[in-house]
Image 1 (cartoon, rainbow, N blue to C red):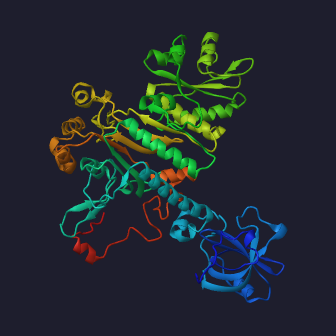
Image 2 (image 1 turned 45 degrees about the vertical axis):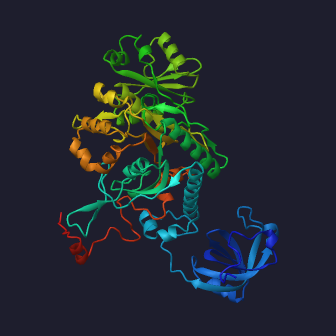
Image 3 (image 1 turned 30 degrees about the vertical axis):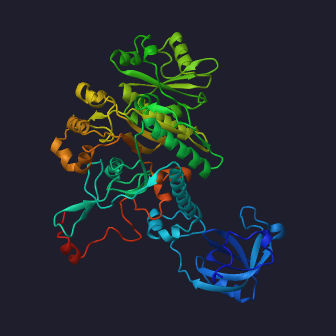
Length: 588
């Protein structure tokens, strides 16, 4: 028999009335009502109300013990009668304490646990063990465990095999800074922590394994964002041999529809297949490559209609080769002039010259450009944009892509202000056909736009005969509710294609052999066509928990300055450690 408890604090029900029980947990709250002391006892599983009668030893121990102390309570289960708390699973009962043993007494708390006192993040991260006791965060971490368990179960059911890849490896130019680990045995040389198991998982396919997955830790020395943790993160790393892009999509759709349906019961989940949206379509229609499909406001090009007008700045933009693009917003006809002024100010902050408006009412058309456009054009715009009475058409004139990007940011602002997002829904899509290369704005050099290991559409022939900036790659992102969960690709498995692709991006053959020697050698001994993806565990959990900050779903995250305030890392090394590693600290 367990010496600390017969039941957990989330277990007892009305059917247990009359039982002698033993519970252990943390003192969550204490209330003294007319001499009777009511204590809520909390453990990992829930909360149970305990009462202590005045004059008893239990009353004295509870009265003298601070909240968040750990205690063991013995007592009898009583019915709460008409005082049932329907908000608690254990709300039918309470335990009358006959004995209380203090297992561990708590000091005065630096932050509240039972109530949210809006403690600053520095305090929360310094005392993360207290923060993790709070109900919401505690549930988030348990949800994260369910996410990982659910993923692992489904991947194995689909025929994938779990592997572990090295943590100490070599540096690889994958877009972010590496974390370097000095070698004691080889002075002046360093390991790198993997930014992702990219090369290893491809090597596993070359080794003859067919379907790989791993809940992989990844390490990148980059700045923090709300949806990205500095330092380390976890991803579901996936790779498949002899697969097409559609087969990768099919496996991930099966995973996500099932996982989200189970862990978000009642929510609307896209499925069984997800919309496929090309990168070009995404940029033109949503102004970004991670469209949020929970609301409309799709961007339309109305340049052809504006071209029918004369003598206005919109027509001038079209004549100069620019575009006029528009979104239609419903039920804003009665909004104040300040509302539209704020929208224009937001567009100007994002690089627009201004915002042209047409506001349709039951009887007239208002707005900043109503006098510049004839009735025929206004009617044609209304029809194209499906504007109704009370709708407003918002237009930006600029370079084609820039106009869409500006409106893309505006549609997000409107969704925030007008509460347009579909509730309790997870709207997935694929964004594919990314450009293989792009032009570096600072240097003018042709560089990889996404993943250097991707297979170009058209293979070697495309690399030899097409303008590099027109080549598409078998690259794709999976997006949910405007959040990119992962990038993936069908891989380049042929050495001659890889050499040529890297040559276009400015890498000499010797650089490829040096940086990716293991993989390029492997490809020369027979490599299967293969592809994969790597959705982020943290971001998946963040979505399911409806959190805006990724640190709310990680047990022990670093702060925005990449510091561990709990364990005081990074920390200075001792002279002995530096000497063993052949290192010397140079003051900045």
